[in-house]
Image 1 (cartoon, helix red, strand yellow):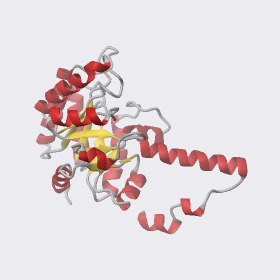
Image 2: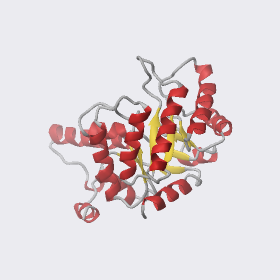
Image 3: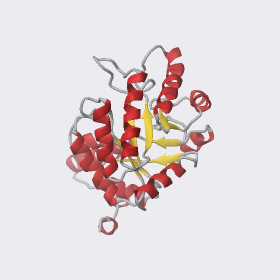
Image 4: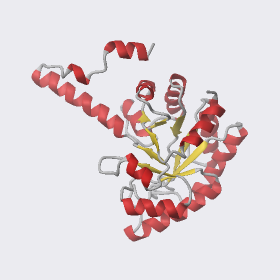
Length: 274
């Protein structure tokens, strides 16, 4: 598929209730996820930063992040949606537009744009500030002749912003502002309560992305609640890194090498990366 076909397919997948998106941190992990049956792949900025030995949170430059995303797009046939964090640079609408133009040129099908961090030490941007950035992203994508799917992330629940009883209304308020500015989907990480998720689906009236993690409802349950899209953020990276740590400790402490059945056969990887 060319980019326009991938974008169309990616948009269609959001009607499956839910689209399940594994999050890759490099081209190799993306290929393995595709082979395992993923219909589309999301990137994880945290996983990418960790794979470079750095903390999460825009510790890579725009060009460094684009290099990783570009290699993923070139190595898989399925749509890829890119986590562009806060847009890089100063996070201004102009910087966001520059990032969107650059990532669109790589052939991605969508982007995530988050409303954290805020200005002057604040946890989140004001909704109106984020709306300006979303509008700039949409305009930049259209100027590049590609209708990227924009997933607007709000970190109200993830960072516990405001009084607990105020968070639902604030997410709904931000969702309305972000969708009016051009966002296609609203991403609310940090939310796992079934009743709240179901209520949010009804209230925002558009596609909702939930980040699943241990303790969250299953993907099937989230689909039954009306969630359009389920991603897992850095969870698969953490799983892979956990396996590396366990295997290294076993090697150093016991002098043993794990179980053969836990390994992807060398011949499979040779074929996969051929």
